[in-house]
Image (tube, rainbow, N blue to C red; front, side, top):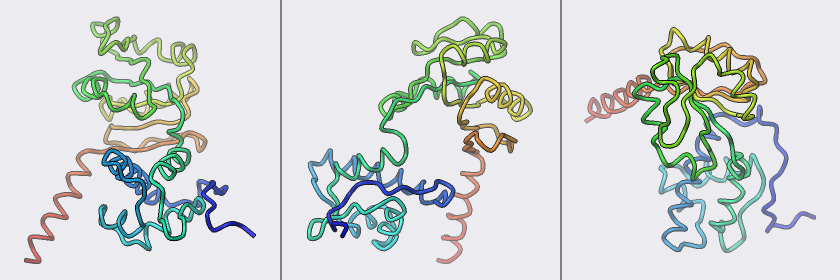
Length: 223
């Protein structure tokens, strides 16, 4: 009979896990890391959920997709659960990343120090402007976009970030796919068409602001 103290991961098909659950895993991870910095060794599902605005039942249900992590009379051991969530998310390893589009947003992201600490190492960037190619930003070399396929293959880059205008995003995505990229984060406000085996996450900042405006407007309307 399986032990109630078991904390190893159970196999789960990624397609069976709702996207919103994966998003909450990232929130749980951040909160657990904050607790560890405060020298907290354990946390209950109720405490974890309350800190993030979720119910304890929601926390337990989300984690149950991947295994059993609690300990009777103890709750969750923070360091142990951090390790488990990192393995689930795939951030317990190093990922090589490239960025295409070194405009204002691209430059800001290249200067962000948080990627490396989470296992994402940006090793190259690309831009169509010949005046930008050849420079380094925070030590990251910027290449001509014409060299994208060759450089990505040579450096065995796994993930790509697209920060070009919407009109160019699909062409860039096609280049990245041809180069063997396994997943793309798209910051351009357009829907991309990619092969099923290539992961895709869209980040539309305008949409996020619209969602925030909706939440604030409706909260005000109920007062």
